[in-house]
Image (cartoon, rainbow, N blue to C red; front, side):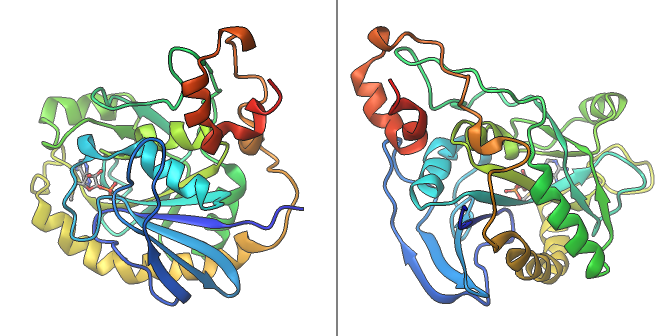
Length: 292
Ligand SMILES: CSC[C@H]1O[C@H](OP(=O)(O)O)[C@H](O)[C@@H]1O
Ligand SMILES: Nc1ncnc2[nH]cnc12
């Protein structure tokens, strides 16, 4: 049986997590450098949790400069098995107003200026991203959110843009024409890297604005996002507090296979693998590399 360790990635407006016992901020170094900040270790209802403020405390790091590889590697090295990613997003649908929570089930990745893989020349891997989010964590989030009476939608596509500027109206309308539900700047390559590291990953997208497409609403500004996030924060914390006991009980392997994503992903012949890269990869892919 697996004793889950829950990783929480806090987005804009979520730089701390309350209610943790035995809490301690610790520096975690990785072969890819340092994550956005120290990690906050602790327990909630006895379940081991590790919190990372995605942009660092005080939000000094923009989306394109986040060291996504170090963030995910640091969580993996800390024993994290399940990640709940919390993100502020703009709504691309009338029926998803500010204050609404969306449990994402798909992504379109339009980011382009980021390192997207732990693998590289000397060890090539191709993991499946057909279903990029863990349905098991999604089920727990949905059930918990409904139990708390939150306005929540299960399923929706998160369009990841590079930023840091918000979208043009033409872009916003293009994403709407693609059927996307929400737009944000951070969940890719985070979700791709979590998959490569065989960590189950789910996103709670918290709608803060209608981006810039809605004729009856002002175009998004940071002030508007922060204002809604402040009012969302209590509900986000309540959701986290209640979902952790649900995710924390000992369990078997993930039914969706997120924790075995590398099983058939490596293609480089063992004698063509680069020892220096293999050494770096141990922290995230040691399970499969050990087999040669
Ligand atoms: C402050 S508005 C733009 C900012 O908010 C979102 O961040 P996160 O996903 O970390 O909550 C969005 O992706 C942008 O980074
Ligand atoms: N409209 C928007 N576009 C991109 N990222 C966001 N984060 C919150 N609102 C956003």
